[in-house]
Image (cartoon, rainbow, N blue to C red; front, top):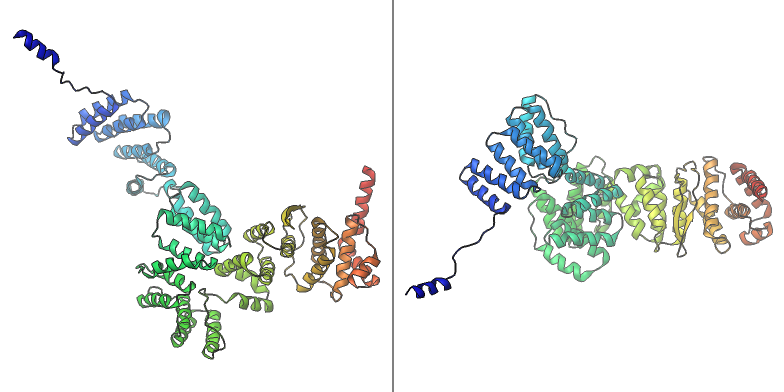
Length: 580
């Protein structure tokens, strides 16, 4: 019997459940004690968790939190300062805990100092709402506002607002730099990514804009702004299959917020669905929130005219005229509407509240002094110029390059420099861009892709700015370029262009009558050859340019009188001989 019991006992497995005492175990016990408001036990368990994991700052913060709950604020602060000084200085929320403790101790100056440190260094903003409440308390107790240089967790929001202001002002390159920095810091900031896509589009960087908007839709497939932007991009690229599928989705969308309604309506109009666009524009006008904007009445008029509702279009443009203190745009379209009624012209399809591109150029040809101020003030016109620089025809690009020279700000300079290295652009247009850059005072070296290879045009001294680039000056330049193209390399051609700008800058505004363009062009080649020690004879120039030797010589002397070329060549030759 006893032997059988012993055998059963021997075969019976022990019923002991093993467990390990570690930081997690004591943490869980501490939390259970907190749930029962047993603070002394919770503190004991948190102390044990710290003993097991002394380098874990969370355990220390938990212990400091319990001490604070128990009213032992100074002990809590000792632990919090130790975390910041010795364990993990990046645990910036400790500054918020310190501020709370100091406030409870009525040490308001110290509380303010810690709270400012929290707001200026904490990137997460976990206690941002609570910090606002504490700021209000400190402002009341100290009877003054708190000096705060920045709120770290809101830096991207502030930067995004700044970028949007730059976009609205037409300063796209600056906006791109800020938006790219924001996304590098916060990749999930979709509004910034969306605006970056728009900025690329305004600058004519089509592929980058599509890629960026695609990233937004990957993260949030229903993002209305991104969907609308993508529809316009598909329209531009003539990707009909993708566009039709996207339009079908947009037509099923009924946004509530006025900003979203406006975005959808303008998008549908731009891609040619004027009927749906008009329906949404009328919704906006009925609500009254945007009814005082002349641009909204213009958009409604454009949509109405394209679906045959010409009386409605006239009514909307007349209302835009009443609302706009400078009604040049509605006046232009009212005149155009009369021609549409007569069947002489098609309805306008431009959903922008400014004059069409060609019409602007016609106005500026009459009054060139208006170009600079208009481009600087109107971001829509500015964006149309940057877009035309990338995607216009040759004639338009030529006009844009010359017009941008009248603005001459940093963004224009960057755009023209990028134009110089674009392999898709023609050499002749790039030569004009080089001329414009030099004429507006860009003196540093320029990289240019000419004839499929990249060259560097050496730095030039700053020349007096020419207020306008005359077509007669351009004609002489083009004639010289045509004759020199096969005989001179690109650096020598550049020096000829620089010489021409230098001469015009020196004699302006007393530029002589340029009746004999061939003679002036030949004179430019003459001096270019001399500067580069190339052999050229008057007989050769007479033969190729068709100007007399006397004319070429007279114009060469005029250029020398203004620019002092002979004297410079003497000094150069003397230096060369002395070195030899």
